[in-house]
Length: 294
Image (cartoon, rainbow, N blue to C red; front, side, top):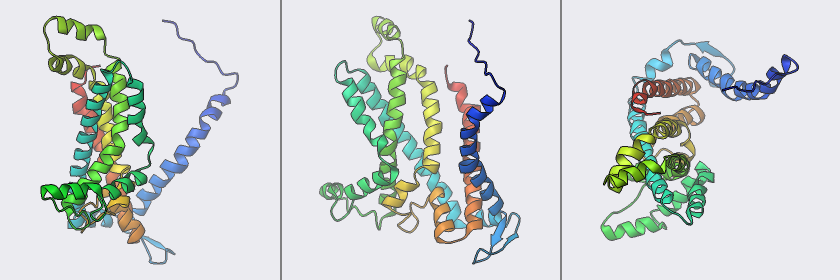
């Protein structure tokens, strides 16, 4: 098939067009990332007037620190729970809306609204709902014998941030799942129905395999979301407490660097978190992508 090729009148014009994006990437990603890597090998004096090279000291101390190792396990649990819950509920909602003939657009619009809410506002909303003094859910849970208090109970605090972070991400997942479902040829479902396959079997053997590229993409996006973009939710709901029960890796970078003024350790944690996400993504592309049917 012939493709139309764009020819620029000047050789410098293509570089000029991509220059704004390159400048933004360099200023807001590459330069801060480079500074974090540089700071992770340095120790700064209390007044910020001088620095000294310390090599791998910050990295070695991190892997001997029980609180940091605990935050790694806590982050893994949090990421897994948010990814499974947000993707599972989004798929159920997308399947339900895809079956609607009328009012499907209205339901889609309403389900997309939470995505427009900032993480901080989402955290505050769920903080009010789960407030142990005035929240409606702790009041209802009291009838089942649950004494909800996320300010003192670490398990309750973890449940709260998982729910708030999942709710924020469901809309994003829903949009992609719905688009994937609408691209599945209806003739395949009809042929399977004629052969006697029920709705569940048709979904599991026909629709879900065809959604595997979308599912794989969302799995990577959701894991990155839980690693980096949930800071606002945690800060607005539990602030890492109680007793560091919700102090995940991204929040520990903030507490050690901004509150504790330990910039070297905080920078080392940032580099490790970035490497961890890169390795996780590579593993997913290396092994999980084999099961994806394009």
